[in-house]
Length: 70
Image (cartoon, rainbow, N blue to C red; front, top):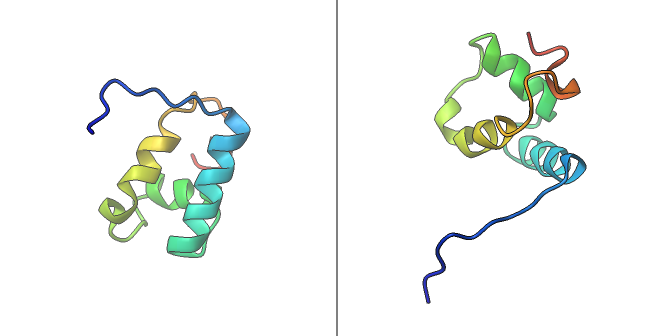
């Protein structure tokens, strides 16, 4: 069975937890460090974590996760 038009509702805390866990598992860095490296152009092979970057993109630009990732 193929499910279409699914909606997953995550709280900010759940989203950050998922980002942190996956960032640590895949790159051995926090979600904040991942975003800092990405925004500074220092993240090697960003396509490998494109799903995490897209997930982080669901957060507002003024989210504390991005406070140091300028």
